[in-house]
Length: 415
Image (tube, rainbow, N blue to C red):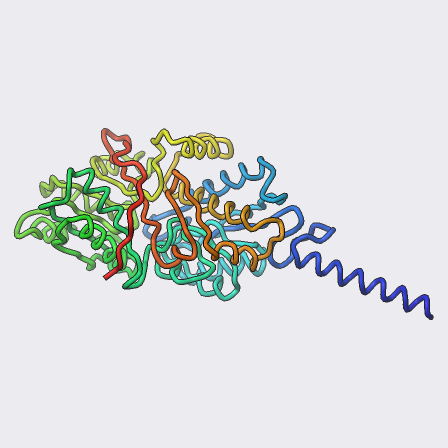
């Protein structure tokens, strides 16, 4: 009996020790715990808008993230662990589906973090924040801002009044236009909450750079392009005291929207600068009509353009070519790549004793990272404001050219 009791104590002690080891992220069996960490791996998955009714798609972000993760694994992983990337779920640009996708990744697939998240109407924010699961991506909407778990690769792009708001787009356009003094700007958005909010912050960016704001129109339905662009074009062409403004800014997600607007403006005789945040996409130029509509348009990516000679961009191109030869480089691909890059940098700094708690503690305790590929990031500050960095490219003769290399500018309080 005494011997059996001793044996029982030994078994119990072994089981307790094993459970503690698995909770810390590495059981002897290598099986992942509920936080997606083993002694040798870290499980990660993403949520993207791969398909949508409007045709808008961020599916290439999956290629970008995979390329960055594969390089990290080829270099031996991070602190002895490789990244097990399970791919990305499709939210169909539907908030409820995004919430379901986030829950599936965490509860069923048991990922450590959700990377990349690149979905304009992402609905999983509340769940991920409550579950204390890190998520990284393009923080285009207010659901990202003010969290402790959501990390925009370029900060929070929907700051609250009083928080820092970006000025880089307006300042970069001013440099390109030879100055903003005496020049006017008109901002066109859709009636979606994200687009309208973007209209507010971008309008202030141009005003901070010295442009005069002559109009903001948020009456464009977000569901589909209008059958007749003339009412919107007429407002734009008469917005500057009966004349056309010097700059028209489109805060619209969707190639069909922008090509429709730009074609209608050009047909009406508009000769000023057309600019947006989404038209830097070589894939969409395969359609001749689209390429013609976007000719001369100045796009504003929040990363160093692919045409740049920066070593960091050359490395990105090489990483993508290795995992997906012949892939056309797109803005969405870059967003996935740089989101993964920042996630890996936080992992590296966290160290080998990895849990979600230790990861979030590291990220939210004055974490800073600068990279010419996307600029700079600082948490927790950039949970509430953008990083203030961006570049400009212009479509000339059917090919993109770097108009302004990546630069960072100070934010100003949002009014």
